[in-house]
Structure formats: C-alpha cells, structure tokens
Image (tube, rainbow, N blue to C red; front, top):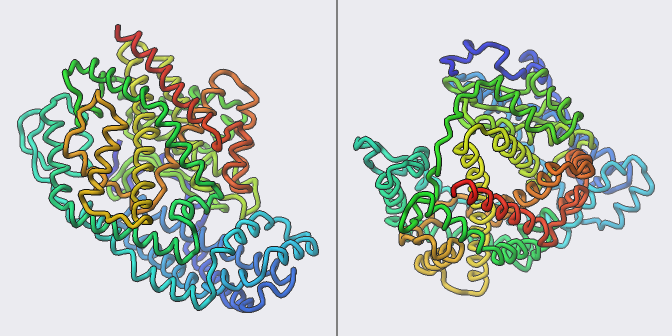
Amino acid sequence: MEYKTRAEVPNEYKWDLSKMYKENNEIEKDIDKVNELTPKILEFKSHIMDSSDSLYNFLKTTEEQDRIITKLYVYSKMAFDVDTKDNKTKALKMKIEKLNEGLSEQFSFIEPEMMESDYETVLKYISENKKLKEYRFYLEDIYRFKPHSLSQKEEDIYVRALNAFGNCSETFNNINNADIDLGYIKNENGEDVKLTQSNYFVFMKSKDRSVRENAFNAMYNYFKNRKNTLASTYVGEIKESSFVTNVKKYNSTLERSLFNDNIDVSVYKNLIDTVHKNLDLMYDYMELRKKMLNLEKLHMYDIYVDLVKCDKDNIPFEEGKKILFEALKPLGEKYLNDLNKAFDEKWIDIYPGEGKRSGAYSWGCYDSYPYLLLNYNDTVDAVSTMGHELGHSMHSYYSKSQNYVDSNYPIFLAEIASTVNEVLINDYMYKNAKTKEEKIFYLVDFLDTVRTTLYRQTMFAEFEMIMHQKEQDGIPLTEEEISNTYYELNKLYYGDNVVSDDNIRYEWSRIPHFYTPFYVYKYATGLSAALSIASRILKGDTETRDNYLVFLSSGGNDYPLNILKKVGVDMETPKPIEEALSLFEEKQKILKKLIK
C-alpha cells in the first residue's frame, strides 16, 4: 500500500506526533525557552565548579535546555522524514539545526572548565549535596576522559584542526554516492539495465549466474579504476585518526575508539581470536552453499543468492502484527503488554508514500514516544524489520525508567534488543513453516545473518586493526599494500571452498564504515550477545527472560559490559561468541538433514 500524498494517508496508519507538539505556537515557545536558558548557562562560565550547589544548578539548567532542544530536533526531523517535499517542515528542521550549532559553539568552554577540577572534588560535592547523586555515573564517565582532555586554548586549536579535516570521508562519499556511475548490465531478460548501489544486491540474488557475475565485476571495476584515489582518501582518514589519537594522548586509535564505552582492547582482539578458531564452520557453510547451488566452484558473486524461494511474501500489516506478537511470546506477558502500546498509542508510521523517507528507523527522545518509521510492504522482510525496530523502541521505552542523563544506552548495546527480536521471529517462522522449502529459507536466513554480521564484520574489524597498526608502525600504506592485505584476509575468512575473485581485493574501498574507525566490531559483538540471550529465552530460561527486562531498563546507567552482565553475557570472555557460533553449527546440521 503506497499513497501519493501525505494528506491521503489515513490517520490510523500515521504516527501521532501531536503528543510532542499540537500547534506551531508550542514549538515557538520551546524555541524561546531554549534561547532564554542560554544566557543562564553562560552565567556559569568560570563558576561551574565553585561549589556543590553551583555544579548541581549548572547540570540541572543544561539538562533542561538539552531536553527541549532534543525534543525540537527529533520532532522537526521526523515531521520532515514523512514528507520531504514539505518546505515548512524542511525550514523548521533547518532552523532547529542552526539553533543547535550555535549552542555547541557557545558552550565549548564547559568541558575544559570542568576538567580543571579533579574527580575527588566531584566526589566531595556529591557527599555534600545529595541531589547530585542522580549525576554520579554521568560525572564519573566524564572525568574518565580527564587524562585525555586539553586546555581551553589547545581545545580551540584542536577543534579548528578537525574542521579543516573531514574531506577524506566527504571525498569518499562523493565517489561512492553523488558521482557514482556503474554503467549498464543485462538483466535476466537480456535487457540493458542501469546498475546502482540500491539495485546491486537485487542482481547479486539473481538466479542467473551471468547477471550476478556481471553486476559484481561492474561494481568492483568502478572502484578498481579509482583505487589510487580511494587509497589516498582512506589513508588520509587513518592519518586524521592517528592525529586525534596522539593529541588526545592515547596509545592507539583502537584504544581511543573503545575508550568511549570503557572497553579494553582485549575484548576486540578476543572477538577476532574466537572467530579465527571457528573459521571451519564458515568453510563448512560455504561448502554447503556450493552443494545446494550445484556449482563446481563457488565465487564471491554466488554467496548472496537465495538457495530456495519463499512464497510467503504476502503478509498484510495486521497479519504481520499477529506474527510479531506470537513470535515474541517467549519474552513474557509484561513485554507483550508494553509492546501493544506501540500500536494503541500510534508510535508507528506504517506505509510508504510519495516524499516519505525510505528505509526504517526507531527514534524519539526522553519526552516523547519511541517512534518507528516503517515502509511496510507486505513481505517477510517487512515483518522482520518491524520486529527489529520495535526492539529498539522497547529498549528506549524501558530505558526511560532511568534519570535523563542515564537513559541513553550506548551504541555498543543498541543492536542487541533489535536482534533478539529478529532471532525470535526467525525461530517462529521456521517452526511454523508449512513446507520444507520454507524451513530451508528461514534456516538459510539465519545462517546468512551470522555469516554477514559475525564473520564478515569481524573480518572488517581485523582489517581496520591491521591498517591502523601499520600506520602506527610507519609502514607505507600504498594501494597495493591495502588491497593485498584485504585480499589475504578475504581468502582466510572464506576458505578454499570459495574462489576469492581478484576484484574482491578492492572491496575495502567501498565500505563507508571504514571512515568511522573501529565501529563495525559492534555489529559482531551485538549479534553474539543477542544470540546468547535469545537462545536461552527460547529454551524457557525464565531467569534470563526476567534479567533481559532488567537489561532493557538499564539505559546507560553503567558501562556497557557491566549492563550486559546483568543478563548473563560477559563479553570479556569468548563464551558469548562461542555460543553464537555453536548455534551457527547447530543450524547447519539441521539444514544438511533437510536437503538430503
């Protein structure tokens, strides 16, 4: 179901943003309130740490402003996303963005001023003023960065330097998006079709092998022909990261990237080591794929094609909702009752429409519902996507039991709740499949999730670690050095059962996440944690189920590794990753029996 204009969409299919603002004058009042609070915050300049009362009043005032500006930003962005052709919502979004930028510039004094005091002073103030207890963890986390903080003068120079940087990722984005031209390939019907980033994986799933091969080579020839420019942009990004690392006094960029979440480098390396010890499971799966596709040799362009066709792609929204509630029953009655609020209170914008942003997301703020934007299209994937985004929304909903400053859960934990829902939906669809082909479809869907998220993202993570270490060791990062390193890793992770086509050596050059160093490992750790949790819940472990709700309600009131331990997941050990890979092995055995 798709609508031409926003006005044509029935209200029952729209999210209800009026719970945030009913009228424009309410928005203007909040904008005025933000502007009124700015001089009050500036009055604290040079006085933030004067006393426990001064610190508390400063924190309360900045929190008040932050809550309002966040609400304004979330509202303006979501109102724009459902109708990007509406100039009024676009103008509002730009106005709020400009307001936010101005605040950042005016408040640059805050961190350096706070860091002039030591944490012992903060602890003294907390003991003197009990009201400061709600900011205890927030302040503790801030002061962890003291050894890496700069003076006000140094900070000004540092910020100016960062503003001068950033062109590497921008250049990459232009090559990867704005200026990309992949040419034409022939589709299954022999027709010339323009290849794009968005339809590439459609062709990689084609049953016609020549279509897959041509799409693969067209994609990578484009990047191969720009390999030296892209090597330059990537090395530039690595050098920028190295600059920040050195200025902020970290031992390595990896250490700096993990420091935000208070995670030791050993957790990152443990992921890589554990996956290395279980590469044989990946090799077995590639052999199984080769057998099911009846191919003499499995190439890189053969690893995404569906092994069976699933005809269950006619699931209207109401039926998808029923599937969702049945699939998530193992999470317990409380979770389901709270989940129902998403539908009763109209958190969800359901159907696609002209001018509506593509894709899906869950978003909101402390003073709003945890809204969902969907483009529901009656497919199995649409049901899974709805479950995924609702996982995020429920995590946000439960996290609001915390104080404002402790309510935001870190990115390291963000994908766990969404992935738990996906695993439960996949398990339900498999168990309720009517045919052998359907069962195979859902098994392969699970196996491919592990392959692409646990194995492939770990390969990316290892590549990043090697590249940044080589820069630190003074090894020249030529295009050949980068491409050869990536190619050898690809061969290691996929094994002899897959032909590592020469063009795959340039895959590194089209991965946007490499311009956000050491981010991708969180996908692998998140999936491992989610599989560990979901598998125990599916086995009827009520203690894990109850502790999972505690996990969801913790927000960001502690460091992520500590929060995960509340639900029995210790990422400082190999166990969660081993449990995930054990499940990968178990599902492969079931698949082998089905195809005999």
